[in-house]
Length: 253
Image 1 (cartoon, rainbow, N blue to C red):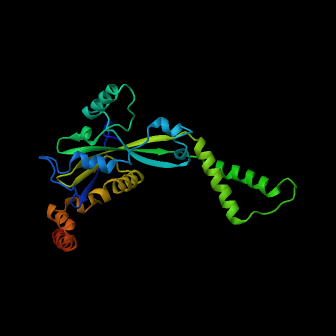
Image 2: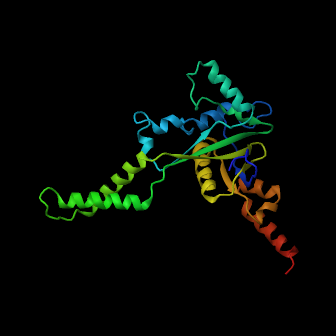
Image 3: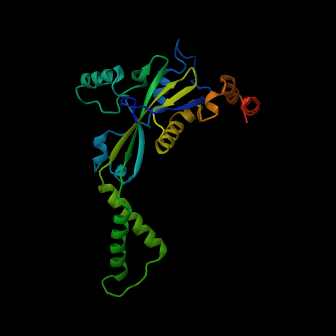
């Protein structure tokens, strides 16, 4: 779900660890835009037309699920990005955007695109059975059972072949990352979407900035800020035990 729909669901995260920028960030910026751009390089979503390209995007046609970052939509960021594309004479692509365009107040917007190619399992099974029968019968007409490895390879070939012909469906997940506060809000409660977001965030920023996500769930939604600070410095376990003990004492039986 995106932040531009009529209803918004929210999942909160703490971003643990201090971003390693290699130099002092500019005033008012916990992480320089150049550092964020460097981290996000290679993890942007491919232009939609590339998903259907049998040449350059051929390998992507065989993937059932892909995730990547796209430019935030509906704000000044996207208008600046469109203006940059126009200035480039139409030669710019959907990947030509920077994190500076995603800055809003004390954080940055993130938008993940999920591309899925769905092939019904029954169709894969039916086509596989037909091809397997043809392979095992052969030109002689005599049946000969294929080895397990060859059967598995044939089934994988059928899956990839059908997947490459399926039209991709696209879904978007929006998030707002307040870097200085160490907070991130993801505007969905879908477990599938959250896991995809967590994995992409870890691959994008985990190694470059040495940060990790911790999902805030009850009863941790009411946890004091000191607990999260202690978690980042290695003292989180003892602080959590103290806080949970005090919570238990004040909870009526």
